[in-house]
Image (cartoon, rainbow, N blue to C red; front, side, top):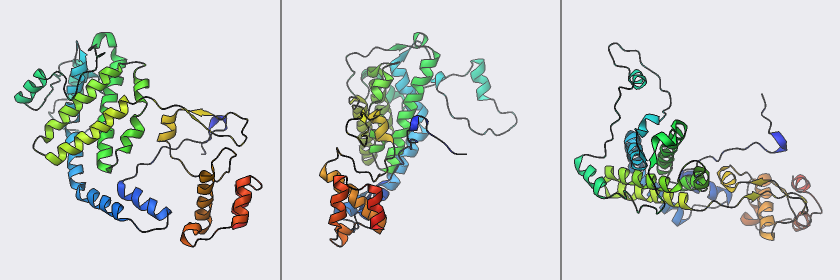
Length: 327
């Protein structure tokens, strides 16, 4: 069964996550060169911190509900926010004489308890109302009853989503996973919720997460680094829309939100367009050489076919014809 995109547009492909080794080796392979000293040092640092990053991700995953609970209780009042957190369905084991937690939730006799790291941590949270950072000027606590069950479920889902993607980025060693998926979300969230409340929740999640690594300097540094990226990218303004370029200069291209453009997998297309700069055209020609000869012949052998390059740059021949003549 084939999938067809409506309106003649191409099927969107989500961007695949790349760890530091994959991205580094892929870049060197595309440029037909050995790994540089800086890249080797980066790989050494990545592998040496691998076990620590996995340990951090495991700790955050095991305490995810407690971290989200502390953030939710910071911004919501007048109810139990964690009662609205939906979890993925897990396979159930049939056992005898074991109380059913879901049945207790339905009956309303389940108590949701927040653990903030003990009595001393509770005192710290009480006397530092700002949590993990300064409270934005426009922040107001949100009443659970007025906010409604639907909005509560979405807000708790979003808080859990932020923490989950933070663990993805820590395991991969790539903060860009957070940047690509968080930049521009503030405008979307503010359509139903408060951006200031979300910032307060993220700061509280950072404070709660750092509480598990008080005696671990390396873990504290890594967790704080990725939360800084998360909060700063959420604060950042939404990037302007991306306009796709059409083959003809007098036609308006399709308009696409740049956050979708950044999060999509971008594959090189061998098409010369009038509005491209000379450097962009040269990159396309190099990509064509790599496609045909499996290497960049201009870099490896200082070779090039100037006549064909000139024709495809000026639009005398199409990129398809350029590829055909190279073959």
